[in-house]
Length: 366
Image (cartoon, rainbow, N blue to C red; front, side):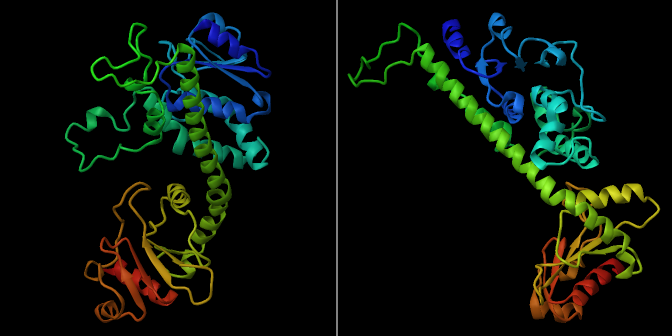
């Protein structure tokens, strides 16, 4: 195996080292992130656990038992390792370490924003909290909930069948694809049918490396899609949400209804942040917006959830309207132009802004 690894050294560009064998989402992302930077483009990847070979690498991630940024060593498995992302409690994995040290220049390069700008800082924190931290927690065996507080919790359904981590895990060689032992026969002795010849160690390693690169691409392209969304949609929406929040009493004196006149935007994160900063203000209960930018578009009245990830609304639309549509809903509510109210009451529609506003107001009063 050492000879195989040595052959892979003879390629131009900085050498990135990580471990061979079973791979995970954290080092798959770490390698991809490094290769986004000019320093590592191009670069060569060496997957080995041989310390003598790792010592020849420019950068080593997720192996080696050393965290030392000046020498480009980013492992997290040593007992003394306790590093976390600023203002977070989750211990970093190799993904978090690389992101901590190189995330800002990667974001700046991708967005053309100055690395020291407030916008890059916002994106850096947002991507860690919404994407990278879960990988860190998973690789370090940290549960999303405190085990002490979940003794009486029972899942209603299985929600962990498909995650990024599970998709990466699926790309690993499984037990049935491993190299047979050296004394295994190549023919089936019971029925005489020919079996595929056993892979050599070199072929097995090459297949494993190819699978790792596929996993790295999966993780990296997902990261870039998230970054592009937060840069092009989530970040610009912040200004629109701030404006709508401060103008909300122009539409309704209670201050509990917020309006986006040109259509919906990613508003939840920004609204919750504003409410944290303005604790003396009433909570927003409904958000109104047209379904599209064209004239005559129907309007939606959406209830604000109790928290970002909750399905429970602070104040859902009236119970007796739920699941009713069109003329039947007009007659039941006494509001013209009704289109629908969802069975859970979290959202409803009306043909006009005035109708949607009235649906929200009456629900607040109920």
